[in-house]
Length: 296
Image (cartoon, rainbow, N blue to C red; front, top):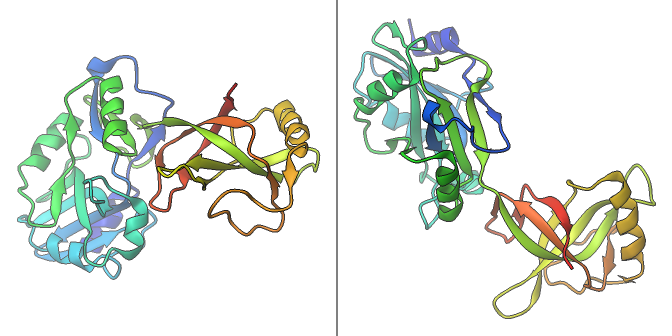
């Protein structure tokens, strides 16, 4: 059996279910940091490697360094599941850095599915982790970090370190080839006050806002553009905000780095929104923002 045949035998990979927060029964769960990268499942058979995305795309041309590193894994037959990432200067993975990896990527392994002829997917999560840790991966391949703490502590740690969030994995769970609630992904949500600097009209009704343009003050006290938010509004609030912001409309934006959007309605900065988000991107934009409400 060649490595591609072996991968086909085990596909599709297991997927986590998005959760609003950590599960309440902490004793029944393990926590891992959530790696913000490119999902990859790899098979090694007698030194030959196949590395596929979760949609079965060949990742070898895109990540040749990882492909070569996997060849050095010491096993006759091995299938591992993980994430290909590029770390920022603080050591946290950033998805946007993958666009120009330039050989800086690394693969983080968080599961092992097959070893020397044995299908490990029915073994409990803890057993698979022990087997994974014994593999002693070569340079460029690492084992995912587990967090020996409660879910709330793990989430706070992820937020403090600038990670996307955590993955909760139920103790004793098997590896299922589907999206499962035995794995939960919980995002580390940040909140911040953002100045409303404009809006986009709703595609459904010109009387409602579709999204808000946001700004923030940098270290020099300059108001800079920070992205836009289009979720978290009630139907009533979309209309109320549209009427309120129309009072402040101006012909040009007063915020630095504003995008050139012909359909944007810019306003004199007056209202402040409370927004939740997962992280700041490298170009000072909010990632996955959601509107929480107006500040007084």
